[in-house]
Length: 205
Image (cartoon, rainbow, N blue to C red; front, side):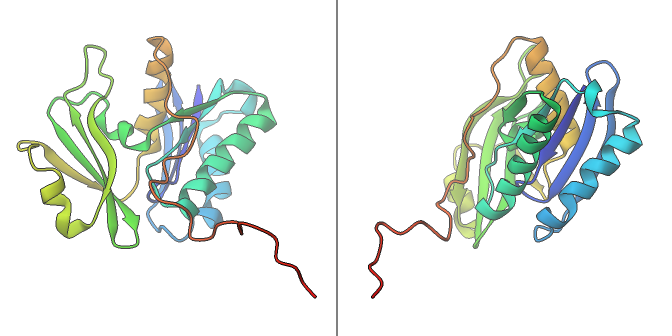
């Protein structure tokens, strides 16, 4: 059983079970309320699923692509929760959640803020129903996206306001069952944060 958290677009939290499926999924599409809602959604999801922390095998964390400010909220929450219950974090690329059991080519598009979108393309899922990413994740200006994805004709486009944590958690369960590796250990911000440390110390007189 896994707790799944993603804040790469909106905020989504779910509790899933390999045999029981998606027990609970809660979503908030407002991209400015990640920090405000994440704790409440985790608590509600666990309560509504009737699950106590000791029953979890781990916590799935969405690693993006996503904006720095929002994405780090979900990653920090997943890592803190997993540390608190002594269970591992399963890090996965967020777009992959939309390509579980995919039967047709798919173009996933999410808002990357600052007048950009993040996109990935997927072929039909493999024999286990697991995602087959063809390209991405990449950034593009919305007006230039069609040029960026030229050559992917026939790919159905999915503009996702949130990455659903339910399928995301099930992806983690099925990857583990198949003995497949999880995703990246570092977040996919795709661009540097707005604020960076100074290159050196400035003497103050």
